[in-house]
Image 1: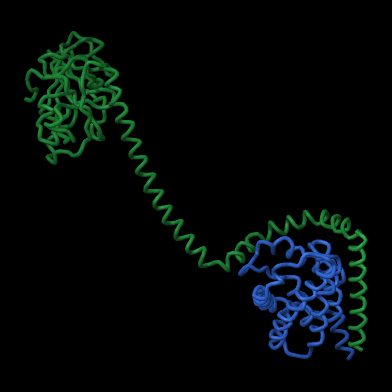
Image 2: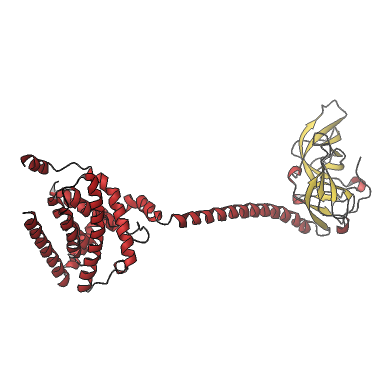
Amino acid sequence: MNTALLVALAFAAVLVDVAAAPGATVFAVRPQLTLVLIALWSVLRPSAEVMLLAPAAGIMLGLLGNEALGVSVLALAPIVVLGISSTGRSTERRIFTSIGLVVAGTLAYALIHAILNSVLGRPFPLEFGSLRMLVILCVVNAALAAMLYWPLARLPSDTSMRDEIRRY
Amino acid sequence: MTSSRTMSWLLSITLIAIVGFLLTAIGLAGPLKSGFQLLSEPLIATVERITSPVVDLVGNAGSYGEIRNENRDLRLENERLRADLARLREERSRADEVDELLNLRTARRNETFAFAAVIGHDPNPARDVIAISRGNSDGIREGMPVLGRGGALVGTVERVQEGMSWVRLITDTQSDVNALVQESRAQALASGGADGRITMQFLVQGVEVKPGDTVLTSGLGGTYPSELLIGRIASVDGSTLDVFKSAHVEPAVSLSTLESVAVLTSFQPLKLGGR
């Protein structure tokens, strides 16, 4: 996928998170669309795409969110690393991988976010401090991932990737 | 190969994050964020507007039970408020009528009244008789005139019981009232008819009576006080060859929707006006 399109996608996801998510609370937690999108993208799409999508989204979260610049860039990195290492399975099986990745990514994101914000002297977000809220957030993010999985899995494959496979 | 690529990517990510931390530490991140947020503000507002229906749906999805209970409570409250509104409207309508009746005290200072609610109608279809909520113990006597809104005559007390009375309306077939046309001073009996209308009979041909003229009680015979409004002339019948002509009178008060009346208790009739 085109670089500009990926950056636009990251921006759109962050915009939705910033604009819509504050009101969209489910069981008192807000689903993280950007995180879920990156997790699914890392499982379903070529690694080159998610390696651009994640830092772009991280920077934009830093610019638009109430956090230190660069925190989300690092907090999203484990999702990408875990996602690109889980390849070679069928689309049907990858849904479980994706949901598992979203749960793990949610935990990793919260942990890194909390640690980095504390180190940088930022106030510790209350929802990450509560284990119960974190568990609910994992469930809500996993539900969102299940909803977004099939539309994303049906996206047409990248042409350069197809050429690469053909050459192989 | 993939591993080294991932490592180099992680290194780049770390460098980007460090640059971000440094910008935050030296205070440059603030203006950068402000500028970006300012530029993104219209987009954020647009996204907020577009996604608000979905946000509402998602936001309320977790509180379905709460919304259901709230909806049930609101429905109950709505029903209660509707009932209250209907009751208040009814009370207001009644209060307006009572207010107008009470004005009679100001208009007729020397008279005394007993105010009563209309509590029933004579089931006999041939009669125009109503039941009112005052009776013998309230000083009501047979033959007392009964007034409606604005002090217009509606009938006369026909029969009195302990806690209620029966009032013969001016449209009843047994009702005769000595009346006069205010404009021409023509006098005649205003009698109720089977068709529920009042007719003034035996009007002398030489006296001009036209639709719209006001009809009052004349006071003749002593069964009613004088100058009580009965209604207006609706139509005049009879040719110039007839000895007398007649006129239909439209009552000043809508007798079918009467809810409250005032009985003129200070008036003592000399005789009953029934036929």
